[in-house]
Image (cartoon, rainbow, N blue to C red; front, side, top):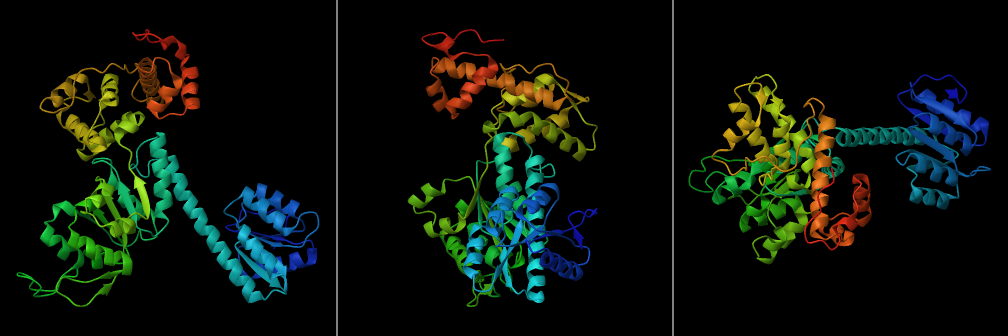
Length: 488
């Protein structure tokens, strides 16, 4: 046990005891320190001192008395959680004043102890509080990793749409609820489904992904739920099915909107009761499977058309992840293209390619209706047909033949920045795109900033900030039939 003035090593866990009765605080610290080897326990006598420790050192658990002069334990609780919202805090209260402890729990305390304290109860609460802090730290690290980088080269992008997607995936992964992933074809729904599983508590258990339209309707039911011998012609043995195979793990049903009414009914039973009944059997089996569904269809319209069960929709739509189309994250295209080139070269055991600036510029300006998948496939074709270590527009035109991709040089010019300086190149690409977009937007709305904000989906304040940064004035566009010359 150490007091606050001791020179302390950096511990794996640190507990702070707060009580204005110094002897009691130090005795409690000795008791906890003796039971938990390697734990650093600090004893302080005021809320002010506790907040100072909290601001200077990592604290994993704080135990505070409620009745203290100057700053009460309730006041300390609010301030400490304001500084560190995830802090596990335990309050001490005298017998007969349990209502105070209940109020503390409502505010955010993790648990409470009554005086006089029973050692076994104390050790149990401390142990669980430390475990809670450990789990919260791990979850926060996952969120920071996803927000900071591309989740192991999978969720590639730095746009606001992608930052929001990473935050959503990190949060959804920590629960065990059913997930519905929505988005256009080619946006990466299966990739996100796998990531939700890998970042969750079932990561070490099976993950099975089923593309529902790829399995004939009359076989999908037996593949998912299994069958018994003799259930139909050719069923010469029992087959457990994919839900049983995925027990304790996760099941991804891709294009859930394409399943038949019969399969929808049986799937609803799995979600409601956790039961699977094989085809031809009168017995059900309990399974524990997290379901992750995905679709590019308008399920709301399907419900109105009576082709998709409403009760199944609400069972599936507990947590929703919406995948942004590539056209809503244009600024990510250079980063995605560079990533796909690296992957393709690695897969083909080739040296990395040098990408001409005009090629990166062309990619950023191309519409890519097939989204990320179309971009990735095009990069693969470029890599296959590249005769040299440089990818230029001649190669792009060659590969474009026989495809719907436009091969003309786009109107937004990419500045002549070396490919290695990605951030500088990206910033200039985004700036060039922004200038062109805002110029055309104001020309279309004749300088009406409110209308321009409505059309673009930006707030008026955000649009004004962009104009200020560009040195552009909306008044230049008012009352003109022909758009003014673009600013340099």
